[in-house]
Image 1 (spheres, rainbow, N blue to C red):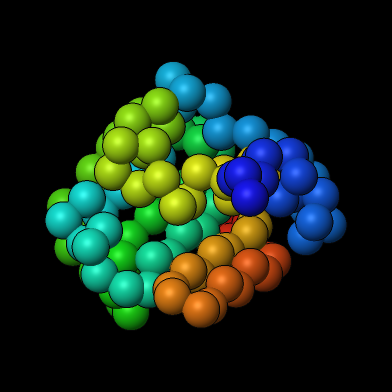
Image 2 (cartoon, rainbow, N blue to C red):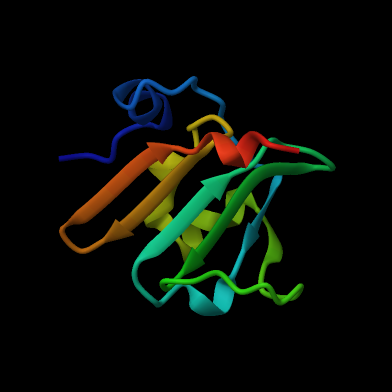
Length: 112
């Protein structure tokens, strides 16, 4: 079975399809990506970012250096499992672990 497209995943969850473009940046906690679960959430885009923040483990850190900017086009190398979900619109969250996939809308992510 092939990987679902971003548009298909967005439709599956009833989300607006809002692709993250290859030249846009996400905040990625690169050193945590080997930890489970894999977490992602999307704030509204701005300042050249697509709004996605991605990390591994149960908690994101408040450390200002926790997330590093990474172009979307490089996520396939370090975090391929998140790629199908990157078309979900701002306000969506994803949690992935073996035998677990949770995708939900969190309107708190849209608050400015």
